[in-house]
Amino acid sequence: MGRREESVPFAFVAESDHFRSNVTPPRRRSTPSEILGRVLLGLVVIAGLVGSLLLGVPALETPDPLDDGPDRPTAAESR
Image (tube, rainbow, N blue to C red):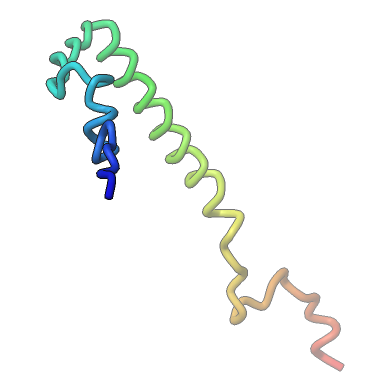
């Protein structure tokens, strides 16, 4: 009986020639202008959220049910 020869028994061995190293290069340090840009972007986002809360909260308030509303004329009550 003939023995069947496989060129590569496992798939990961066949793909091993595609990878040269598993070591990643060190990350590039951010410049001061990039850091300042990120800080300013964060401040703009936070200011937008705070501004939307300041403008939106009064619009969400419901009127007090115990409040009589505008003053009624007293002539209607004396009848």
